[in-house]
Amino acid sequence: MTLKAGQRVVLAVDTRLTDSAEVSGVVIGFLSLAAGTGGTVEQVVGYQDESDDVREYERLKSLLDSFGGEMPSESRRQLEEKVRSLEPAWAAFQERGPRVSVRVRFDNGFILDGAHEDLFVPA
Image (cartoon, rainbow, N blue to C red; front, side, top):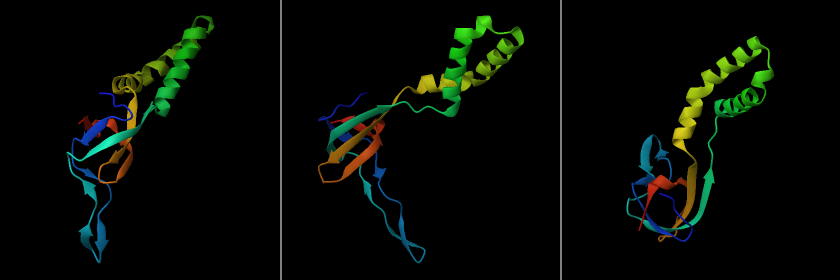
């Protein structure tokens, strides 16, 4: 599901906004919003969450594809081995796809910024 700015949404699950507040070791409260709380999407931000291994895979794979045929066989073998060792990180990255976060202004005045879009469903 892809949310759009201006779209009405509700929280799909109870969402804690703050950590517990304690006084003398006794929890006195925390702030959360209940599932079903409605609001409006103000902003949608998509980004790729790349690890160092993913960036290294992309760099080495590009090097191998571009210059592998011209490399000495031992260098090419070492590069192929390194690329193979990074393939699990690349596959996991491809499976996850891009991350999308949203800024939602709730009807009660609260603003939740940087929340993953999966926390919301269309209203």
